Image (cartoon, rainbow, N blue to C red; front, side):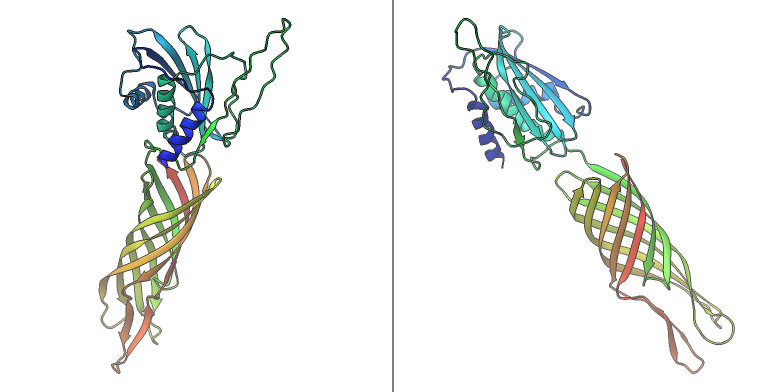
Length: 359
């Protein structure tokens, strides 16, 4: 992909002016980079200068030599994505043209490699001077595919001389999945109310806390923990009330390899495992016992997250858990017969609803 993108940029650059064979002389360039609101984390001037010189394998920006090229770069961010507009002048201030790079990638560091390549090519082979017009290169509000050059009709000239043509360069659009090396990790916390069917007697309400971490280009990893409110199950034997009380606490780990965004709505599919501790205390029997059991389960789930603001979101999720060991709880009759009064189901359904905060 990088090779195809580099070839596209080279063709786009040199299609704007005839190639000229130039010997490499000891000349210098000047680079000036400005960043608009929301672009504070984009590439800085010093890092871009180093990247350009690494590609040229020489010092390109030197204060001790006269500058033959001035490159001004303006990075901006809008609802339609990121844009970088390059404006060039020669050492005497004559206008050399403009270039524009746009992308709808998630992070502006997707511009880094392409910007360094474009500036390196321009420094190595500056374009010829052209007349500057106020709208020499409009930056499109919505990134679009590169279009062929559009001819421009200049105002009539009274002395009969041929009017100079305006050079208009179409913006190049980088793919949305262009590698962005400085994409930050995504971290978020979740606080949710939950409910399980099939794990404890009846419907078991509870609370769950979660933490998610997503590295660039990798699936999100989620760690969660929760407890269910105590549930009670009657034995059904005649006489005084008897039965057992169930308490359950758990921790889990899930990986979410599938994630899609639809505007403010995010949908994900996850798979993982959970480990729980089930505490059972009997009551009303001739001999009451308390026991603890470990429960290990595989889980598969899906969830939808609705963004309420840049930091807050509402989340609804559902998952199915498959216990690898199922608890069967029974009591003994005076006749010696065992009667089952609760058994964990082979598939447990868990529903959760809560809020998510992005850190």
